[in-house]
Image (cartoon, rainbow, N blue to C red):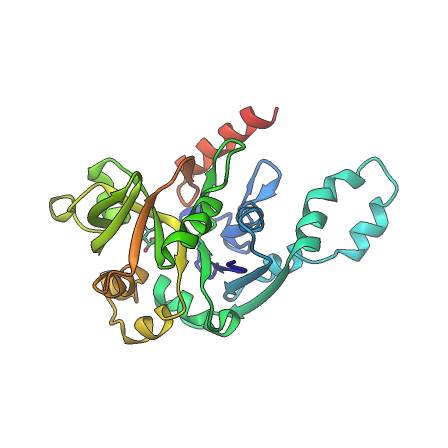
Length: 273
Ligand code: G1P
C-alpha cells in the first residue's frame, strides 16, 4: 500500500569524526553492511519499492553503493568472492532509488520537506538510518507500522520507553492508549528537559507520514535548536487527531552514538556467527 520510503541523509555525523570527514555517516558499516542498507532492506520488507534519499554535499558514496560497480563486478565474476555481492545486488534488483539534495541544514522537518519532490502526493515511510532496528526474524518495525497504517490511515511515529533522564535526546509524546501498544497522540515535545517531559515515550527514527504533512511543515516555524522540527509539524497534525504513536516490537540501536554503534556491532556479530 505504501510504496515510498524517504531517508533523510544529509547530516554531518559529527559524533563520528574523523571517520565521517570524507565518508557519509550512513555508510558506516555494522559488520560488513552500511547502516543505510539495513534501512533500505527494512523498507523493502515493509513493501516499499521506491527509496527517496535526501542527501547533501559529500554523500556521493550512497549513490554509488546502490548502483552497479562494473569494474568490481568484472573482477570478481565467477570467483569464490562473488557471493559477497549477492545481498546488495538483491537490494538493487528490488527497488529504485531517487535522490535530491537538502541545500541547507535546517532540521529534520526541512529535510523531509526537501523530499517532497520525490514523494508527491501519497503516504510514505521515513527511516532515520542511524536508528537501527531488529526484530529477530519477526516483522520489521516498519512492517509493523505499515500494517497499522492499514487500520488507522494517519501519521504514525514509532516510540519506545526510555530512561526519562535522556528525554532531551528525543521527541517525546503524550496521549491516550487506544489499543495495546497504540497511543492517540495529544502532545509532543522535541527534546524536552526531564522536568518538562510528559512521559518517557520517545520517538525513534521510523515514521509513516501522510502527504498533508508537507503543507504543515511549510508553515512550521523553527523550534528546538533553531531548526524546523518534524515533531512540531506532527504536533499540529495531532491537534486534529491525525497522529498515533506505536510501541514497536523489537530492538533499536542508536547508531548515531559510538556506544550504540558498538552495541549494534556486538549484537549483529553474535546473531550472525
Ligand atoms: C530526531 C528527531 C527526534 C527523534 C530522533 C530519533 O532527532 O528530531 O524527535 O526522537 O530523531 O532518533 P535527532 O536524533 O536527529 O537529533
